[in-house]
Image (cartoon, rainbow, N blue to C red):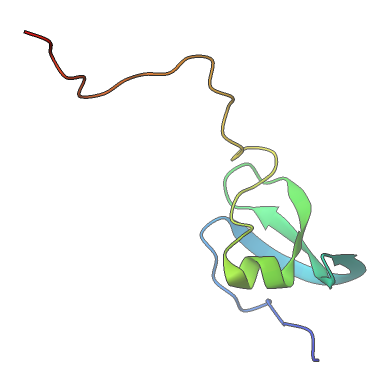
Length: 77
């Protein structure tokens, strides 16, 4: 199987720089730059193509929820 070439891929969060010799879940790990914070990281090419890796590990990880908010609570009259 030929490795995915992501050089010309347009992604809302990543700029694809170059493939590496490393593997993530058996797919080629690409060195990418986050469009938001500018930090570089490795992402697996097949995870990006499937849409399972879409966020920067530095700036896009959701913060842990410390409380729950209830919206549209029913009123008890």
